[in-house]
Length: 171
Image (tube, rainbow, N blue to C red; front, side, top):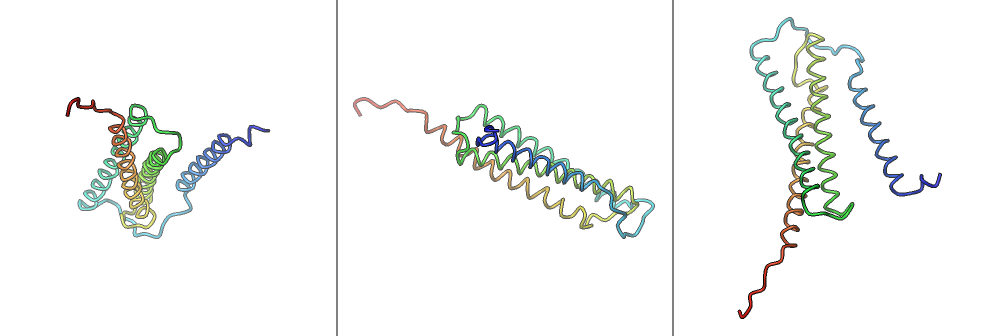
């Protein structure tokens, strides 16, 4: 049992406990506690269809940008300046990736909320069951972009410092 006392083992246990927690949160979001008290509708109006299309387009855009952010983060970590493990710069990359992953999760929750509303026969994009997830989807993406920008700046700026310029002779 001495492997449990090592720092990497404790970190991995904490990581997997967090991953189980995220999976359980998704399961709870998918659980159907009963229909919400909303006015049922038979068909979406043309304005509601436009609202739904705009929401789904925005959801898709942020999801695409999150995926691009994760790809750019991976590219910089692999091809950029090698940073020491768990330095301040590495923490920026880690929290940027976590923010992007949370944004993807919240986008999925929004999608589930839309599906649930349509299954239950009502439509209200200001419903609290998806309104908080819509906000969290955007703001967690925004936080990930800010953290990524700082990480990229530090990585690329420090990389430029490593390049030595030749000394001018006789000047």
